[in-house]
Image (cartoon, rainbow, N blue to C red; front, top):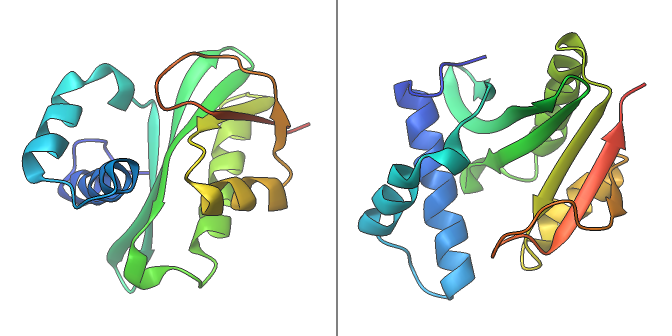
Length: 149
């Protein structure tokens, strides 16, 4: 676990935003766009952030936000591009699920965008079932739930 405001956590969240903003708009994103997104704040409130490290170097992250006593929401799953294809996403999901269970959650839910096809495939491979919408937002196109018990 890592404090959300640590240098490594901040660098990973900035990397995440640079990538997803650019993918959404179909062009490279700017540092100013990332700053504006982070300044919005509420969507980046996490109760827990896990940071994956290889040889001490932060290479990925995944966050949890408590929804209620039995449910957490998975947020900001990210593996640096130069570290993809090595099982990091799967390892982060396993660690997040353990952490969620330790928090007493029986359910993990998430929403994601339609263009994040790799993320949707990762969730499906790991037992997350697509469900009807449980939230609204401009970037929520697909919703998933996984029961932990």
